[in-house]
Structures are given as structure tokens and as C-alpha cells.
Amino acid sequence: MRLLLPILLAFVLPAALCGCHTTQPTTAAPPEHAAPAPAPPGKKQPHDLATRDNALALLDDLLGDEKKVSLILIIKRESSELHLLVKQISETAGEGEKLLKQTTPKSATRQLGLPPGETATREAIAKTKKHLLLSSKDAEFEFQLLLTQEQALSYGRHLAQVAAENEPQPGRARDFANLSSRLKQLEDRVLAMLRKH
Image (cartoon, rainbow, N blue to C red; front, side, top):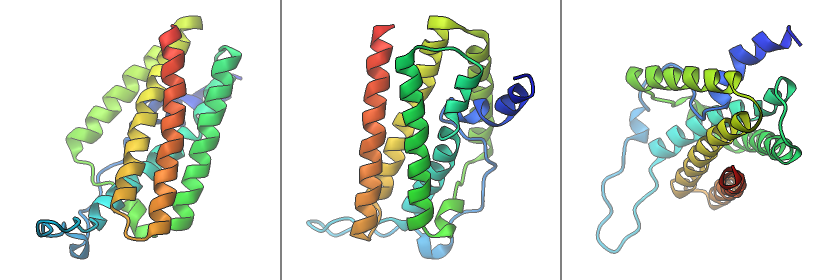
């Protein structure tokens, strides 16, 4: 147990429990992904591939962290209801990450594009939330964990929705929309548990 704690602190809590990833910013999207010109009146706005790629990169990052969230269960006690929910969040995130790796060009998952101020702010939020989770117990721990998961799931479902709206291939767009829907269902369950606290 003592050997696991430093690993959890270093790799799981700072990002997975707050929905904020602290990856350094990358270079801007290549020119071929530049924002399209506005559509003429009455015509549908064309898909913005740069927006899709950035949303997918952020989503891939988030899901990679969220699939590890169940590791917190090793060092903290919680109700069986929360235990089951956290396990399902981890499983859904893992399945979503696998979907992105199967359907998304590698270049799309590298366009994080976070400015330094955003990166520093996310790191500060992660540090604060890590402290709250580790210093709390029982009902307060469950409340803090649920809060972090609500934020992460809300962010994730909106990223998947934006990716779906900007994906020109209908099959992929459906996959991203379905992932958004699954994350929304989990978010609704988290909110229902929060209302009980």
C-alpha cells in the first residue's frame, strides 16, 4: 500500500480527478486545418477540422486520465454505490480512449494547443483538488470525488459533442456523439449522488 500511494499521487490524482490535464502547449494546427470561411446564408457551416482535432486531442488526454480514476479506490473507502459508479466511469473512459485511437488520425490527438497560462492554471487546480481529496474522508471525500467527476464528465461530453459536430465522416460523428451521450449519462448519475449529500 505504501508503495502504491506515491504512484497514485504522481500519475492519477493531479489530472484524473479534476478533469484538467497539464500537458505543455503544442504548436498551432497546420495551415490546411485553418478555420473555414463563414457559410453563405441558408447553407450549413462546413466542418472545422482544426476544432475537431483540438477537441479530440483534449478528449483523448482526459479519457486517458479518467480511465485511471478507479485507482483512488485502493487508498480510500467509499460507499458501494460510489464504488460501482467510479468503476463504470473508468471503464467508459477506457472504451472511449480505445475508440479514439481506432477512429482518429494520430495528428488529431496531438493538437492540444494550450497556452501557458491555461497550463499553469490547470496545474494549480489539480494541486488544490489533490489536497482536498487526500485530506478528506467518509462523506466529505465522496462529495469531493463526485465534484471532480462531475467537472471531468461535463468537460468530456462537451469535447465529444464538439468533435461530433465538426467530424465530416458520418460514422465517426455518430461514434463521438454516442460517446458524448454515455458521458452525459454518467454525469447525470454523479449529479444525482451529489444531490443526496
